[in-house]
Image (tube, rainbow, N blue to C red; front, side, top):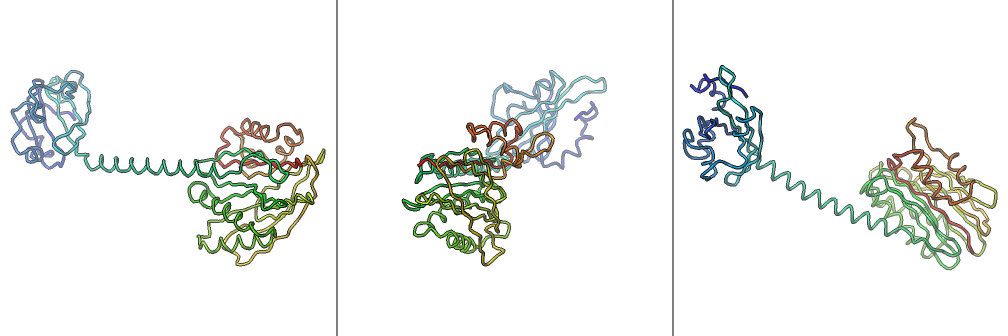
Length: 364
């Protein structure tokens, strides 16, 4: 703001008289030359003629006096002050005379008390929300199955969520001494709502598998329990679910809408476990799934993964793809780590989607 010497007769201050902000003009000796009506009314006295620091009950100028800084440099200066129970943002601007000499500084006080209170409240709520999400992430990670042996199946995996909470989940668990449940699931979306559904899937499948190993019955009951949640139609998930029979070394499975095919490594042979079926959603009242099965041998491996692997894109918008994944699998080294390392080189921004890859190997 710039005013000439003529401003001091009050002609140029008629506008600021109607302002809700406080406005005052301070000279080089810290004397208040002018204060608008709003400021005088709120303070309860006429401020013209007193020193600017008297407003704050001081006997000398403030250490961070912005009017002095403005008059020394000719530049706008800012600071925050507290008066009574209110907080103000103060902006000091130079006033020049007709000869372009600095003669005073105009200070505008804007009440930001409410804004500060709202910001503080939002920060506190954000901190609490962050801590809650951090706790939920920790819970989600702790719910992943231990990397150990389940009825002759050795488990290993790599798991990287795109956000703090993931929509991908997988599990390997003993149903009894003969049967083992194995699945990988992809819940639509990310964040809190997706992570809650992953917990629902985990707990429900484990509960439904306690007293039975009939895959179709388990899947029908899973679908029925999902419908009972009465969620919106945009909430759904896909799952590739199977049961391993240790006695027969047979893996039976169904595909409920999962769009990636698990890879079977049997000696030198690489094949895909292809199956089709509808995802778990509230569009269908009843579901039926075709059950497939495959005989496994000692040292056979099954690789399960979600679309965050094959749909990861490089800078040319090219997808990593199933073929690249299979090529890495064929090398037969440290498959999971090799896949993840190649994926990071191919797509540095891999974590735009959840990334989950799981391996089970017949070891007994």
